[in-house]
Image (cartoon, rainbow, N blue to C red; front, side, top):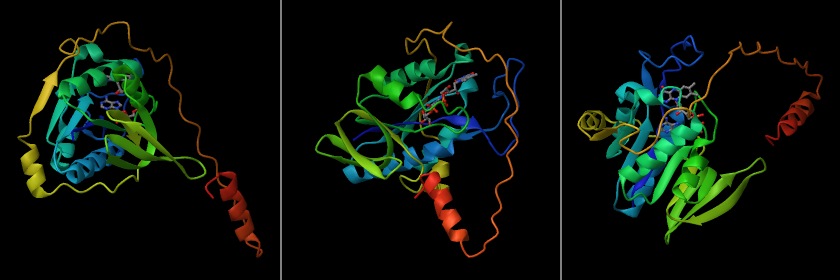
Length: 255
Ligand SMILES: Cc1cc2nc3c(=O)[nH]c(=O)nc-3n(C[C@H](O)[C@H](O)[C@H](O)COP(=O)(O)OP(=O)(O)OC[C@H]3O[C@@H](n4cnc5c(N)ncnc54)[C@H](O)[C@@H]3O)c2cc1C
């Protein structure tokens, strides 16, 4: 079974981000890393292929400047190869353009039975890419998976809900978005890191994939500071503090 994982390479969140004059996140010169959200998809894919006993994990990524640092991290975890779409014409690409690119990259990767992505990325987080990729491929879309099982040509997931989970299934091939916590991502071994350096990365442009670029982007007209975090409410425990805590958690629908 071949599993394709969408992995986004994002500017390292540990380094303060900068904006360009047209209000975009400055990606040039910023150190890129594998979005932690996507490490769950990579781990899930490795486990599914391992369980199936054959096949490979293939990565697809769209990133500027031929960026491969994040891809190498995922290759070091055990993925076999990658398709990277990098093209100056994609500067300012919106989520739909990204999805068109990724859907074509999945086709280029060849023979995918399943596509995994995270529910949302850490730097952009529209949370719309996985469902759009599914629609463009004409495959079922299953979202918010906290468990993924493959059997008899079908994928079955536990779909996280506010109250618990729903069991959802679809025939393969399909696109599944996974939540953080679906599995515990492994740390790459030294051997894995060394092996990743020579694993193939098929670097292509939008036109190689037959995707038209141009007036498909979006314009960011203004950026404002996020409001300061408000101080929380302090509760002096008079013996009923636990009731206030339980009521608070119930309000949040955590319990
Ligand atoms: C202002 C702006 C400028 C941009 N400039 C560029 C640019 O110069 N060059 C460029 O290549 N892109 C560029 N992008 C695209 C951007 O980096 C995102 O890929 C895209 O907007 C997807 O949005 P999202 O992160 O909200 O996706 P979400 O829907 O939140 O992501 C969900 C999941 O989809 C997958 N996914 C999303 N994006 C990618 C990706 N790029 N590669 C692989 N998997 C992905 C991941 O698994 C991710 O966890 C730009 C976007 C914006 C808004």
